[in-house]
Structures are given as structure tokens and as C-alpha cells.
Length: 328
Image (cartoon, rainbow, N blue to C red; front, side, top):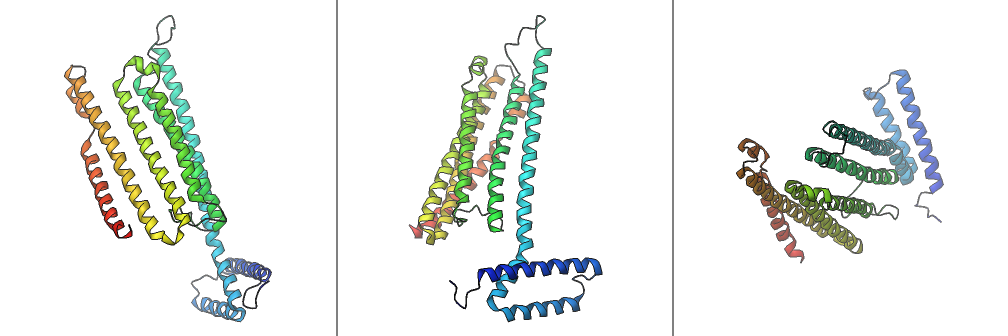
């Protein structure tokens, strides 16, 4: 039951349809007659008529007119999200094809370097091929994750007519918590990535080769995945806490920023540790004469930028913690 001040839903739907039809007819007329928004007199007349029509209908008319005018914007937002989703799918397919070509190339190279009796190469693919294949697999996994996230973005845009909101204080949409759903997608992707990196680290063939550099890189990937996984867990906890206390949005937004800064700091710490370990390893190889000084200089990781990022992250943490003090 509606009061005399509340617009009747059936009337609003009918009015919105009529206004949308009128706007479409106006667009067709402009195309046929050459009348454009540059015709100032006609624009003013149209605006006056629209205003008079809106006033005569009251709040219900204004609301329906607003919806009719916003409809093209909402359609554009939905179309944009659909396009981004299709582009992500195309990118994923391209990565899969590139990985297949890379596997074929590596297999051909192994066959060419094999012995005369076609015995399999005990060493398998070269280290550079193994690294390239690992990177290709990571790109495929990241693209698959992106498809899932963009599908959620599309669903949210379709339901709201607005750009997706992934902030920690975003409102639920018709009972769906898109923020939590995105966090769950990222968590599953990270868990899969962590399992994949651990499998590469525990690969018996790799241990037999005794490739210390490959082991150090694998440990770095595992460390980064674990830090990101911990950060996602804290973000999920914050999201759940915010939904229980939605009146404290400002505080939870600052807490989310603080957790992001802490995760960034921890990620840089892992990268710094790994870069120093790789540097020390390469210097040991060079001291034994198995590596030229030029190759050593090219291969040494640059820790200067990482150190600058670590300090910047620490400053951000200190600033946010000071800002949070009055709320504690």
C-alpha cells in the first residue's frame, strides 16, 4: 500500500517507459533532421518543456525522468565491464597458446640435443626453459583469476548500473557481498599458486640438479604468496567486522589502508631477503671462476630500489598508526 506522497510503482514503470521512448524518438528526430545540441534555442525550449512536465508530475515525475536520463550511463558502465571481461578471456587464451608453443619449442630443442640413440636427455629442459615455462603458467593462472574477478565486476555493474565498488566499506548489493566474493577468489588463486610453487621446490629432478638459484627463486615466490595470503585474511576479517559495525566506515577504511601498507612492507622484506641471498650465491659462483665479472654485474639484483620501497612502506605504516591512535 502506498501513501498519496509515494509514487505508485506501476505508474513509475509506465512513466519511465514513456520517457525512454520519447528520448529515443528525439534521438531519431535529431539524426533525420540534423537538429543537434548545438541548436541553442531548441535546447532551451526542450529544457523548459521537460522542467514544466517534471513539475506538473511532482516527485514521481522527477524520479522517473532521472532514471530515464541515467539509463544510457548505466548501460555504458555495463557494456564497459562486459568488454573488459571479453578482453580478459582473450588474453587468457593468448597466454595458453603461447605456453603451448613454448613447451613445443623446449621439446624440439631437447630432441635436437639428445644422443644418437635418441635416449632422453637426463637433464630435461634447460634452466632458462624451465623458468620461462613457470612464468607462462603464472600468467595463465593470473589471467584466469582476472576473469573471475571481472565476472564479479560485471555482475555488480549489471545489478547496480554503477562501476564496481571493491572498498572495504562497500555496501552489499541485493544481499550479495561482492567484496567478500572477490577476496575469496583471490584467496583461492593464491592457495593454488602457493601449492604450485611448493611442488616446484620439492621437485626431485630439481634437487638432483642442485640448482641453488632456482631454489632461491622458488622460495621467494612461496614467501610472497604467503605474505599476500596473510594480508587477504586480515582484509577479510576487516570486512566481516565492518559489516557488524557499518556506522564506523571511516575507521575501517583507515584500518584497510594500514593493513595494505603492512602487507606491502612485508612483501618488500621478502624480496630484499631473496635479492641478498641471490647476490651472495652469485658472488660465490664468481669467486670459483664459473662466472665472469661482467655476467655477475648483470645478474646481481639491485637492492637500492627495494630498500627505498621498504622505507616508504614503513613511513606509511607509521603515519597511519599515528592517525589511528585517537580511535583506539
